[in-house]
Amino acid sequence: MTRSQQIILGLALGFALFLGFLLGLSVSDQWIIVILIALGCGFITRFVLQWFFKRRSHG
Image (cartoon, rainbow, N blue to C red; front, top):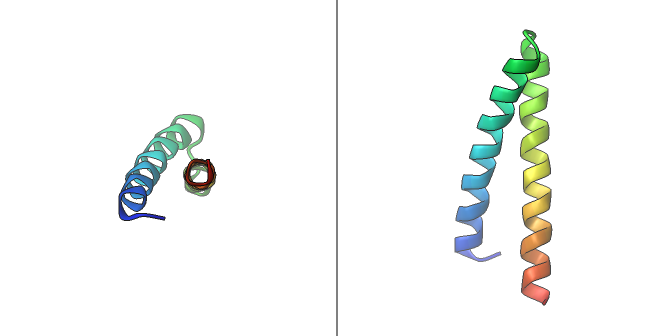
């Protein structure tokens, strides 16, 4: 993974965690649920971007 891809991945992860945190706050008042939703959004974003970067580098 190149340096620019790492920067894009880091920014996207931060943004996904922030949006997941906001989504979790709108869904539930329990902190554990909020944190789990935010982490879920972060993991989904990470795996999708890594798949995209790998697919793009092989194509």
